[in-house]
Length: 281
Image 1 (cartoon, helix red, strand yellow):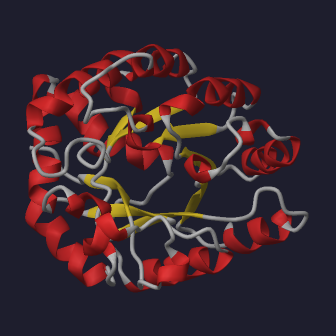
Image 2 (image 1 turned 120 degrees about the vertical axis):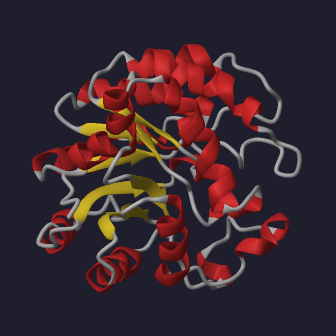
């Protein structure tokens, strides 16, 4: 049995419509507060000891709030926050946040940017360079159309660790693999890039998905990245649009049972601990 299982991707929020414009009328279930006590109960039932909390608002205040939660709840093992990577004040914020032991990395919602090559802008690259200097990680929240730009980004910073959130959101609902599969395999060729088995159910048909719908996509990721560069994440509470915590996490747990116990340990615990420099205790 694998000990120290960690959910590598989840969120918290106190819902205010102006802070979460991406939560539309189809996502009414998300228009409420989601706080640590609710999530902790789900974690315990699933046999996980902790999680990595990821930003959901593009505000520096979000990072401060998540860090405050991590001090109150020991199961929150790390925070991936937001800072303006294009700001001239970026180093001020990095100095502030890297003083916190649970501040592990940064994420920007690339998927909402209109420019397809947003992550290759000079100002953005400058910010990414700072992350490398401060020993942080970067979460890639992107769509398949961004994968070619992501390849250019990660090769510019070979010492910086990147992780792809939600498999780069392949078209699971349509049950098509290409060109996503070819492009994600290309990105996986860079050994500083990892991937989270997370967020799949919300790319599927929310009401009709079955575990078998996810299998072809997990097959691609397992072959491309290998167990040592894969983490498991729920994407709670966003995943609740398509199922409860157990029904979302169980298909992934069942899928990786084809792997050896050592490989399962990597995907459920070791890789996340190493990537985000966690203290699992």
